[in-house]
Image (cartoon, rainbow, N blue to C red; front, side):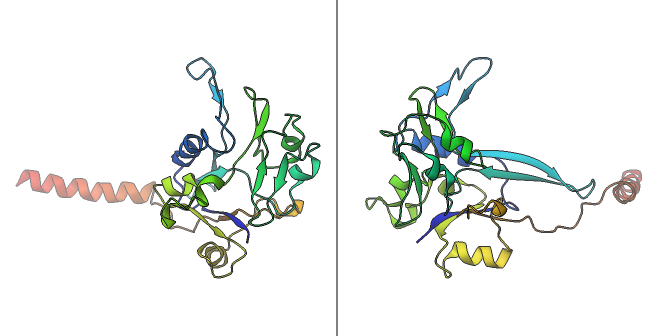
Length: 230
């Protein structure tokens, strides 16, 4: 079993709801509070497991804003685990989730330097490294209904851009989505074999601009003038 996320870049609207829900749930989860630094100051900052990048692709008028959520990829061959001198960073054999043992982490930053996705953040308050846990304390909680045993980011996404499941199971919803939509890994050439996948934006017809829009507006204006004169 290899649990992970599939994110549909065509659907994500960049609302940051997933990032906020992630921080809210994990504040009392397995890693402890996610610290904020000067939250009401001139330069607020803090620890976040999930961050959303925004990119403009294509040429106007056929350009498109792509919202790109990024968190730990839970790689199959995770260098963050290999370089950890204390064994605090480890990969679970049963489900492939990469975690950090807060009691063994000494905050040396080796894992952060090894991660090409920028997925790890040092909590300056605790002095330990923190990262996405796939809400491991939630997805295995037998007290919750089955449909709620998913990461907080998946449950809260208003656009349903995020999916969670077993990517080792070819019949799972996430595996089928990857096959049908041409889902891809981020930076596969590095050889880390990340579990998380992204679904590419679909091709859409360009929105009429320039002369086309002006011509349509001119016709509407003439029609309105006729109605007013009557």
